[in-house]
Image 1 (cartoon, helix red, strand yellow):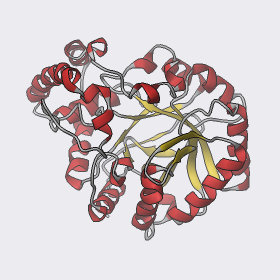
Image 2: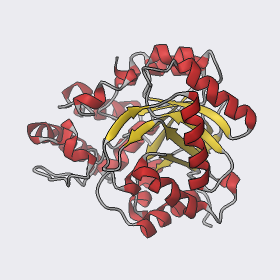
Image 3: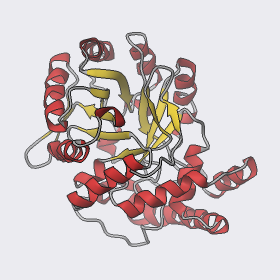
Image 4: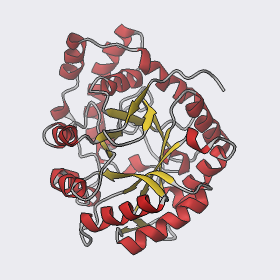
Length: 336
């Protein structure tokens, strides 16, 4: 193994110690088009070797493919070297359709049983509902996970994409390690109410979408076309005039990145890192070269003036399009 480059932080006041950045594995199971399993596994190893011990997945990513991929990749590693974050509750059909959310205690115990088998482990470090189930009180869901913590099958409880009221109710039942939620230079909705609350309660933030699914990078160009199995083919921010307007913001960011002799993606990650040590960005690299690029962001230091310049060049209120299609936005408790 190579020497660790990444410093560590505690995830919230009660969570595990994790690397300053984490690896999001969703893209390794087809959400952004075809991926190569061998390269994905090599990327997981590269991330772990660099000190990024937090690996995030969902039991519905690739209908279990993602968990099996990760399980094989970490099989020869000491279990304590990996912090596994798993989301549950999203229901899938055999043709890839979505069937809502099921966060009932009996369901989540069933989901966990299969997750442990696919990952080849006997406990999950952080277990979290992927979305709020409107039919199940959050107290019931968190209480059931707390029972699994007591039984040793789960170490910590997490939340995902929930709003302030739900966070307070959940935290009243059991300690919450972190909230996983989208946060980036162009998705800053948590700053008004959610982030102050998580800081008040000692709950960490694992921030996904830091690169806005590749928008804040050098990879997406005007007129880009995405395959039907690519999430971006259905994302409002990547459609027609919205994409053109958003790429104007990316161009403005690119000029600042060039001044620092870094990539757009590295500058966007550095901005996220600057928001506080309680925020751990989860980066969805699925190739080793992208992970190497991600690591470069750790060396960027931005002072207050530079941060102000970045935020003035890319104002969040200038972003065109919602972060999800309308049907999915309606499922986000964090947006209510």
